[in-house]
Length: 167
Image 1: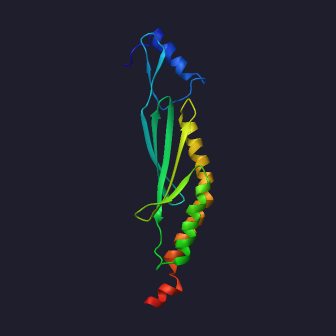
Image 2 (image 1 turned 45 degrees about the horizontal axis):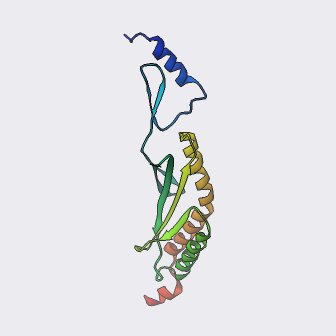
């Protein structure tokens, strides 16, 4: 048995069904007068995989803005004994990425290659907008990830001749 639909709740459902009200990440509720009330979400977290890399996304409110940070650990920087060429090429690639505003590639103190990008999302923040921004970032990242992946794979496959002579 379902509860009867009152005029106020029927009007509220009609408002929610309209195309001009975007589906937001914010919580929605219906006030007693039938108006739609948005309760701002303070944080949003999700993860996804792309080209064999696990990315983490964290969104937070910063004043009136909603800022999304996407990051991933891309793997360890190869030791010189594994491949001097790959190590130097990866360091050069990370240094070259410094000319870009976003995303940022870094090599941490633990020798982990990392990528991170922070963007302010336009309002209203919606799933469609968020996925569009993530997709745009991944399109920028794709050639960088392919090159880094090839360098890491080459280091794992065959060490340099100099390191083979040490054995």
